Length: 393
Image 1 (cartoon, rainbow, N blue to C red):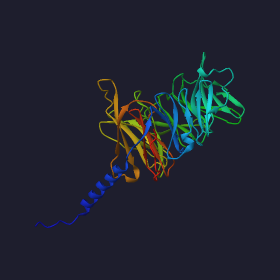
Image 2: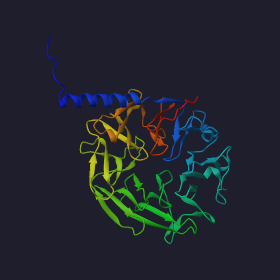
Image 3: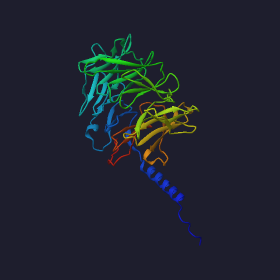
Image 4: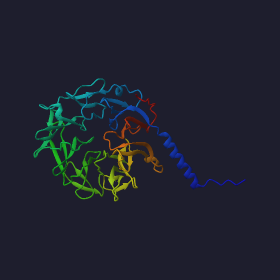
């Protein structure tokens, strides 16, 4: 009978690693939450909004018995609805703005004078929870913001803000009432006084690449520089400061998303093209302390969705090679930073390059809940304390 070998430290570590990987994988059991083709979320809010093929939006809660979310039902919405930090829903309907707080939709703030609902696009909500509109006129698009005294067209002493008719407009989610878009001279960051309506702009001159993102404090806008590298545009004094090498990884075929997580310092988690022209996930220090490559290899990695609190990251992986029908395919992965020695766990495959399908996070740091759309269904994974979920039909 052969002698048993003692369990070495190396083999013990390997066994523990395999056990941790199995436990993590076993705990990831996506729940089917019913039909959906698009969704909207906001970190800190305990539900998401999901749209089915008929165009109806419904609330899907992180809890099984949330009557507030279950009561949400919106038809005839133009574009995407928006979620406020307090859970209020704002949407653009056939006749103007709608709001849902508790119960049935009600009329929201009247549209600006002389503006037809067909000329308006709801861009979202400013950090104070008020709607921001892009109004299409024969002279070009303009931006209207709601202040204490009513609607104001965003303008300063040099003239009105003139965004592109279809271009990206970034809203600052917290810290400042601010937005940004790509103008003729580069990215323009606009701030305004919610009580008076007065506005000012800062311009990142010659920075005209496709993407930009506000830092969590709202003090600056991160842009791709006119030379290779990331720069921070200060909203108060117009300073354009070099942060680090890199880029914001834009690809016209793909939705784009970023996130933030704080360990010793706050880091921007974003896609970036590496030296071999593959999209990879990077973590970039906002304070200028450099950046770290998170993914690697001869595959593209993108769609960085960071959970509230920054413990989890979800991203997509794909070869970005269309199939015979011209469709892209991608696989979603979930990574736990608290188990950095364990691999990311697959959440399954889906069609890629489809906007408004997540992944997105709802809930708070204690009980983050992940949602995404795949194959016409809404899927959910809980990453916090048990909430006794019940699938919805």
